[in-house]
Figure 1 (cartoon, rainbow, N blue to C red):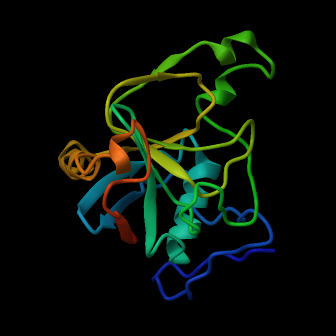
Figure 2: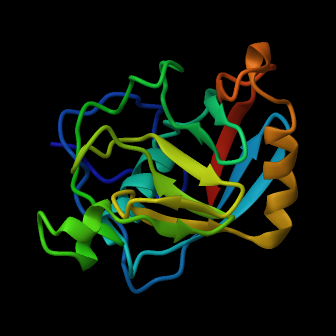
Figure 3: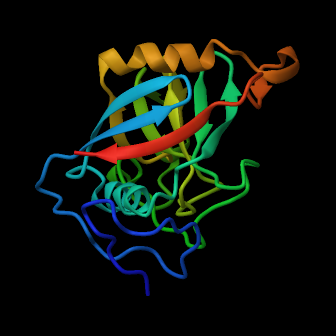
Length: 195
């Protein structure tokens, strides 16, 4: 079973785990993160009251330096930038999966409304997934208000001052001039700092 990392950042870098993390945060505490990239820093307010397991997962991975050196592997034009995969392919993860939270948990299972789009505002930090309850480490940042089914867990928001860095990231464009794919130039997450 995975163990809670040291809160002082001294835990060794780890990229594979055999189980989802235990609860290592206090959901009643306010958590902020700085996602430091090769093109600027994004300031994030995490939302543990809405998505305690998801925030716990992000904090857990960050304290194990999981995201250090990981690239943003995907930009979708006028929509999102995606990262959090240590393989950089869009298929990697930490070795476990966990259940969706807000807004998915506001609906009954199999509710037809789960297929009805809702707005994910600019600055939303949410989990990427490959289907119900398949969250791992990949996340995306919405850089233009977007409509999606409510099946992507929202666990944070980028501070308005941090959106300038997001805009810089997506300004590199998609390789080959496509609408969806890897950035034209690599964008590296250097570290995720928590405070």
